Length: 156
Image (tube, rainbow, N blue to C red):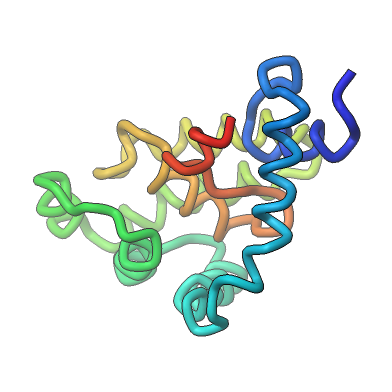
């Protein structure tokens, strides 16, 4: 039976506790605890700025998406042209659904994350992979969601 800390980490990373060993959970917990000691405060300024804007607006626009791409250091591909050619209002409609799902306290965190992820399937750059989409979901509900990327996957 996994510890409560392990179960909490699994929940944030959308993985059943049975798929993550206690040892891996312990490593993730240590990494999470050490992060503030290893990263300078300025690194996450961009993230916090976007969180603040999304908290008020309830959605992300293209400027917010661009800031997240920089913060997450995501490679920009051909999908970027599609995103840039979309109206900001369309980007906001898509991300508003994801933010609303992520914030829905009626849903379990895993279900809220799943719905938020599904809402982003129409957003260029978020159709495949989880790093970009999870960053969008994180800023929509930073108290409930976490970033899932290659590094998190390796930890699992």
